Length: 191
Image (cartoon, rainbow, N blue to C red):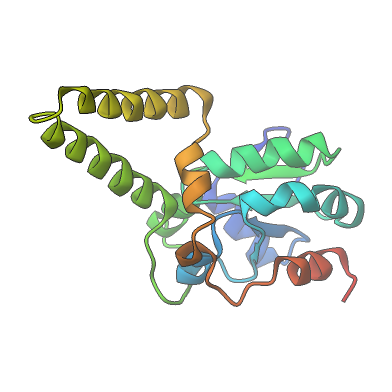
């Protein structure tokens, strides 16, 4: 693994795994998404908890790390957090789990749950639809739809999503057997 790019494609990661290369896969999706489907051998450290563990991971994980999420967006944010902690051997799986599954990569499947992006589309769309309907009787309700539109525009431009971060804290997205502290202990060899 000598590439200088921070992006890595699915075939390269699959080859590293097949060759037995020393590489750690960190899946930064929610625990529920990870439970639904993940790459065998991946560790789940959800993005919203990664920050508190970034320095531990940086200090104790010497192997190159490949970050995985649904599409690559959250993994890019995780890359920035780990880089901020001084970690240099980090790559992002280009296209995330969507690309991995499209390429026919091996996966472990569990109970399927909606991913965060789908939940955001449902919630945002429902709020906009409700605001438009209510605006028939209460014209000011149209501003709610405008506010959601502005929020989605900001999310796209800043590559962040406040609604997604809020949804990731709901019990539906946290229900899992994943213990992040135990995963970090495994990653850092403290087990």
